[in-house]
Length: 250
Image (tube, rainbow, N blue to C red; front, side):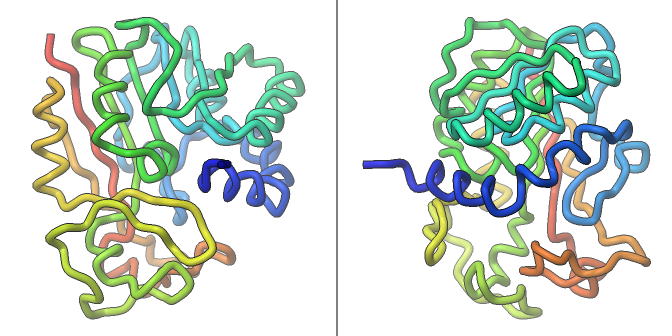
């Protein structure tokens, strides 16, 4: 039976991600999330100059492209969806950045131990892979002292979401205790944890937590044309997205 997330992202690639990929690859500055907040304001990433980077759930590969432009020595994108990787490889050939791509789930990556200095996920493994499996895999792939940076929906936004097709509300819509696997109607499977469980999971896999960046919608932000599950007005009051930054202990 086909994986529901591979099916969902095959459809998404045909609907919109393929068409937008080259424009995303062409950008020179890293930005984060639906509000496109610049990395220069959030400071989530370490200096990647000369570093080896793995992107878990890379999709069409634009984040890896940005990191390569910033000076990363090697960037490997990992994703389970052939259609997304086909787009990523086309863009890589078009821009000549020399990225590498591996077709695999982030929970089981066919790459050697301690091969990378940075593992990053921007709405890839961070929500589409089982955290109980992909966090240990990220730890395995990182060298001692390597960093893990991942962007996800905030826990608060999920708690205030009736379902994926309805806007985030200003009241709680679901219990926090027991949240883990979410099967949205007609979509793939996502994974969301409370903050306490993220902290325990990261520590259990040898990570020191360096930062939790809760991203506000900028004053001039407008509700995203596609990702309208949360409005800009909501995002100016509460964090719709958050970036976790952790370091693998030496």
